[in-house]
Structures are given as C-alpha cells and as structure tokens.
Image (tube, rainbow, N blue to C red; front, side, top):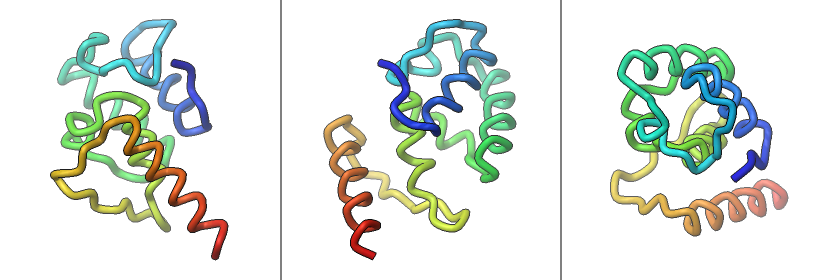
Length: 109
C-alpha cells in the first residue's frame, strides 16, 4: 500500500534508508521487513528529527507499521502526543474511523 499523506511519505523514506529496501508498503511490519534493535535506534533518531518530537522504542513495538505509526504521530497536539489506552484495538478500520472523526472535529473548530 502506497503512502497516503506527508507523514507516511517521510516514514517510507526513513524505512527505505534504514532497511535498505526500495519497496516499502505502509502496512509492512518493521520487524518482518528486517528491522533489528540496532535499526530501531537509527530509525528513532531519524523519526524524532523528521517530526521534531520524541517517540520511544515502545511506540515502535506498539505501532510496528507505517500506517499505525503515522496515525499515532498525526495525533500530536502542539508537540504533545495523545496518550492512547493500552487496550485500544489498532485495526485498520478503527484507525481510519478515528482519523476521519478527528478531521471532522478540527473542521468544526
């Protein structure tokens, strides 16, 4: 699946560099695609620089693909990422609905 927005595009470029792969889908799992603990450290450095916000190793395990990680990053509000409950089901359908609702709410303000 191709990137749908600027956040996903930046993450794809970072993953291509880190993983040494030309083709990366936003639904590829970082670890299945060759991600290692050393590559996580480099990825965190690049992601934190690209988005001017610090995400943690925990976030990479919690959101192991670009689709979920980009959705998480997009939830930041004035450099503060929203805390997501541990029990949230991060299925694709739920994340799409959440993003749509956030877009609607921001349009209403």
